[in-house]
Length: 287
View 1: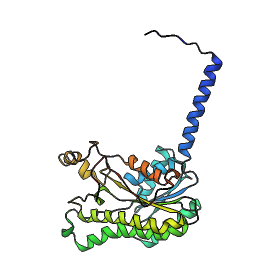
View 2: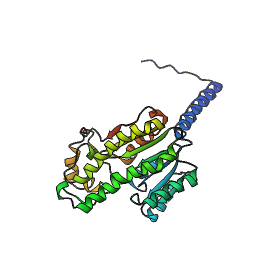
View 3: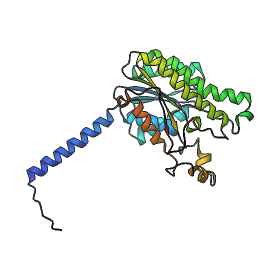
View 4: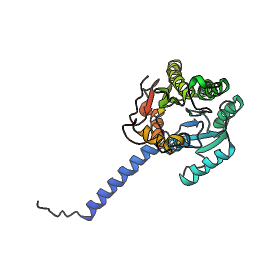
């Protein structure tokens, strides 16, 4: 094969470089501005998937209110987002909130409005699982706790934030369910049932809030490498068994769920509502 040396004049090099730079800047600006002007609340967002979602929404231009039950966790997450990831202090704020507390939920909403002037996006990510084992072996108080946090709190937050989402352009709610909502884990019986309930909540809320131009969707992560799932991902034998069920042959990363959430709350998904999206590496996921 013959190669031919091509001579490019300095003016042409300058023109090519200028066009390349403009193209990169334009692409970067589009990414950064995808959620510009939007305000988001993300519950349970100081660790794992919630933290990744908060980071991604902020990186895509939204102003974000993070929350957690403990003040020290809120401050640690804010420090991480501001110093390590370079998110400006006026773009990311934090508020202590136990989603099972009406007082805390009210404060979360009011503080968000005070800090950012409104609310466009709610990401309901808070969840708990105080017991392991089958559903029939679950104590009544543990069952109540699971459904109070995983389902009831999501429903109540939806009711409480609705008046603030109405009239905003492109309002969104995203519930974070689980692959266990589709394919129950035998050792997480009650938790699995609560996550299935969120799939139904998504459907009915999409119907009821659609006329108000509020979209409602749900993401169902598979096994993601977080502190919450470390008993699976970090235990020899158990992790190998679980990986056999995942066609991609690996566990997910929090940022992979965050990207899906950012898509769902953006104008790229403006005609999408009432849907349950599974991100589980191909793991079976049908009711």
